[in-house]
Image 1 (cartoon, rainbow, N blue to C red):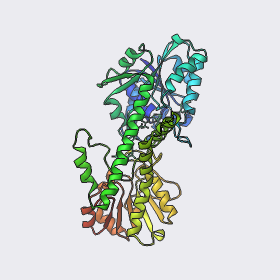
Image 2 (image 1 turned 180 degrees about the vertical axis):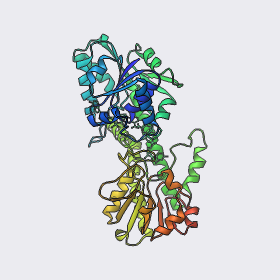
Image 3 (image 1 turned 120 degrees about the vertical axis):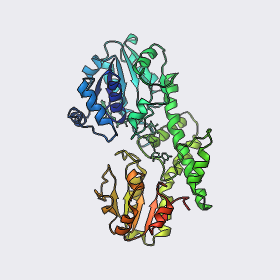
Length: 424
Ligand code: NAD
Ligand code: UGA
């Protein structure tokens, strides 16, 4: 099939490469000229394991082309994916300006039948609104069908997630395009969940908000467990073995960040309030997450006198390991907070450099003469660090583990003071 994917970010680029690997002919379009120039030169502008190889392989096969020209890509495609960003606006709403710019442009370009598939996460009602807008703008009803097909991939494992999803959600108001969508994805083994446009949009928000609530639940329990000297990792283990609960998303620590959980929680709250519904649980999840930094900084202050004059090294700045994405990163919030406290902040992250702090290329050099080491993102290299070497380099002995990713016993064995939340 000929497919146009609009947006060459995490979702658009992964969708393009995966669909091309299935043998579809994919035209991936982005308005960002620099991004497209890089892709034309076989460079992938984001850090996503395996993506560069898949992009290059499918470009070579002739299945994947990149361009900034939407007109030609739309003309040559029967299926059009919208995968542009829908970031958080100041009032908590999803900012639909990129999405609307694309749909406005599409309304001027469609001159034969197309299936328009929204992959971007958009508030409930957006796809139905798109149907109405296209009709109002004079696009014939025979020339399009709108499908909501939200994406559930995680950054860092994007290709694997897209190839092995636990479901493919397809929202439609008219069943006509379903067969084509099923054909498009026929190489993927996963059940289809067919629902309305609104239903599909809601499933996406339900997933991300549930994950955020689950993380905030375990983080609240971590604070209570801390007061009773209970190890939260044991609690998570005991809790997660119950199949009704499940072991995933029970890692307590610095909380959730990233481009989606915080924004989708805020957007769902906004969507509830718009209907006169107070989203008590969603608000609580956000409040808990926002306060986690305070909890860790207070822990540190209890252990380190005169924190303001100390050299503090932070390992990890991305919002989670295996990505260079720092959007809504809790680690970055922590770094800002440490600067406000007056600390001399040094940072090492395998994929990210941070503005207005001293960045290091080498994780061991970054702890030279440091008073405190903080693990803010659980990259594998931190979990497997050579603690004897770290001890040799550091001046102080406090290690604050904000991701419960190293063993307190190991850390203590090397002569450090381990500080964590609910890690006695
Ligand atoms: P992104 O910011 O990485 O990429 C979006 C791309 O769209 C950018 O390259 C931008 O230049 C391009 N773009 C914007 N306006 C355009 C236009 N008019 N024409 C062509 N290109 C345009 O975003 P992302 O992380 O891939 O997220 C995209 C959507 O998918 C969001 O709604 C997000 O919530 C959702 N989502 C993201 C993830 C994830 O892990 N990142 C997972 C599931 C769903
Ligand atoms: C998340 C969802 O997991 C995806 O299903 C979804 O498609 C995506 O958002 C999206 O809509 O964009 P992602 O943001 O890539 O994916 O990252 P996650 O792995 O979900 O982690 C999110 C945040 O939660 C990270 O900051 C991570 O450190 C934190 N987290 C995760 C915890 O604090 N504890 C956990 O147990 C799990």
